[in-house]
Length: 175
Image 1 (cartoon, one colour):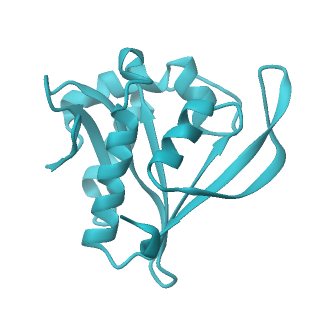
Image 2 (cartoon, one colour; image 1 turned 135 degrees about the vertical axis):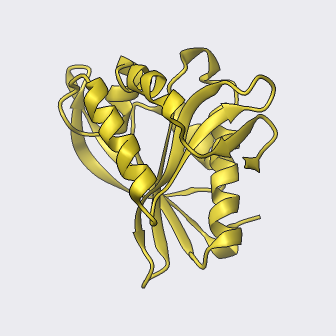
């Protein structure tokens, strides 16, 4: 559907559900996606999420698949949108560990940014991450995001408190 140099963003398929369930139970994914207590996902909940995506007219969730082999490796999309004020919040995960740290996530985020700025009237994209996720921080900087603030000691992970970093990218900064 939407292509980058390494990945394609496409619709989620029923055949992705079981693998998505496995990705959502990868500890590295769980610890980076939210502030909740890291608790395992059930296959039923993953199926329910997939069913809601299919029924929604306002869902902008994409499966990330490699261009070379068409392997489903993760997901990205718009998690929250404020159409009135032209702002969206995005998220991404690479669930397949062998594809982390190799540019696939950066490429997918660039494709998602391109989709947003070229196919919607959105002016601002924002995201948040935790300070211990240095790989994601570097990736977002490569995509043009700027750090806008920190929520100090927002999350308890790995036995200590860490900041939540808020980053943003404006349409006028988009290249």
